[in-house]
Length: 475
Image (cartoon, rainbow, N blue to C red; front, side, top):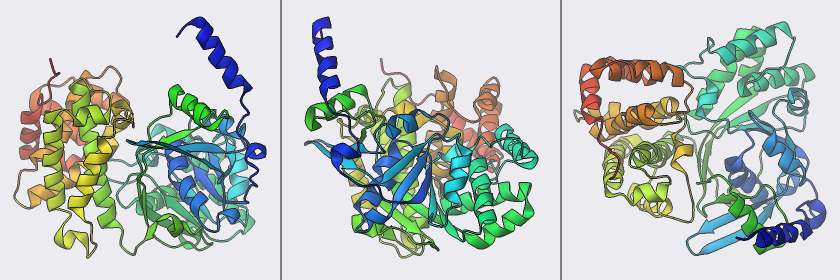
């Protein structure tokens, strides 16, 4: 593109109206949901479901960012409005969503406390990533983690605002208790097995370490809802922003691109009410574990395997990696192991329709118009593998089988941890130190960061060691 063309494009963009509620003539619903983790996935998933509910006019979302304020600042310029682009092989469709009515910098803990303590607020939803719960390898809250310990010191002294999502939520729940605002639900939407229980243990653990009376109040007044969430949502690019401008005739600095497919399964109580999410297809069940495992093992497990194996083979997106026969074979083998432990009694009577789910995943992953980058999926592997690879490995070995396909995912992660130019993980320093060791001791040390019991099994260490180097760079 020439300089003249670039200037003309910029002038055209500047002449377009900015997306806001005046342009869309849409009123703001009242805040009844507070969300932690304002990002693309929340907007394509929970915000979309809320916007589709028949009672959406009564359910507004106040969404807080995590580490940086950027998303809140951009969205606030548009009164919370954004365009959802559903990207299928056949083309794009566009819809403006207005369920987010306030976008706030996560560091504004006082505003968070004010909203959470408001009687009208019925729930807090979470998409703060698996690593944010600060689970140790034993599955419990690690109160010795530097940021958790720092938040506890701030909470105890009353001298500052907590910096982690957990610390901020506990601070806000203390404000709700002080205000006498009554019970509410915390709805975990992160990719964790038994994520409602994880959230309960993390929140209650931090509250207990700060104030035993607050912890008792949380136990009595806060319902923790478990969910299984599913919608592939890659990062937004400048090309996506330009596509919205061209198709819709307005400027949107915060569009979100997602696949057409979406799924949400929930289990738990909502003591202060909830939107009619079922109008958009959400499903409410008594026992969520089979649905969680189907998603975590088949979708997220395959994503992790492709993220590490694919990048080792020189690929950058899910679609590229899946087109590599070596990567596809590894995914299919892992799915075979996972399916063997999802069927029958493990399904708890639920009809998981696994063959159809697998076929749908192949089609979804192959959508080349969804540029789902492997580097994005690869982050925080030490946490993710505990839920995506280790359960399948242990289940296979308990049945007298090797679990080689699940072990291969772990081996690919170990190879990737040593080869990657950028390795983002909450235990990156510890993984780097373990990688300085040699042979089986290296593998054992890295495995211990994921699951100590697995690391103590000599046969597993030998199995993983033998699978290292399976995915050499494709010449």
